[in-house]
Structure formats: structure tokens, C-alpha cells
Image (spheres, rainbow, N blue to C red):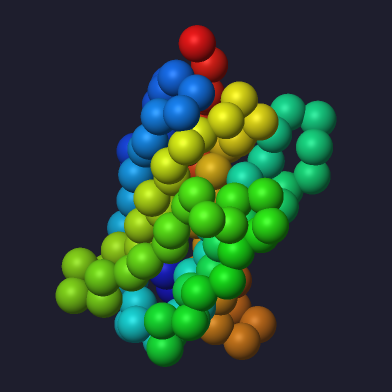
Length: 115
């Protein structure tokens, strides 16, 4: 079993930056593929960034060039560095760990981009 706890969300002005963290416990973190999803009010949850156990990264077009996903296996933590934030980035951000059919979710952290 994997437990995930996100942190780092908050209120930021357009153009600002935030770094989200997702701390994992309870299993072998390094072998999991890790993902960041987000869900805006009234919209479906969408995958925005992923990192494999081999550190290959992929991004949704909406965040490419602005967001960076990374992982620190020694700390059992995955990060999402978010730069040049826009009001449309406002959403609840969720961390996800996946290994085969095993999928685990965090509780989410709110990010609000507003002046």
C-alpha cells in the first residue's frame, strides 16, 4: 500500500510560481510511475505531468514549458514546479502513483491563480 500526501498549494498571482510536493510512504517508491493530475471546477480530472521510474517525463500541452515534474527517490517525494502560472491553472492538484494495476491517489491540494 502507498500513502500519498500533497503539499505546497495556495494562492498565487498570475505569472507567479509554486512548487508542489507529494510525499509517499508505505512501499518501494522508486519503482512507481508518478503523475500529477488536476481538476478544475466543473471539469474532468486531467493528467498534466508524468515521470517514470527511469525519470522519463511527459507533459500535457497546456503546461509544457511552464511546469516541471521531478522525483527524489531518497526522499520518496515527487515535485511539480509550476512557473508562469495562469488563472486557468486554478484547480485541485492530485498526485498519483501507478505500478501495473495498482493505482494510489493523494487527497489533493488547491492551487488558485488570481490577482
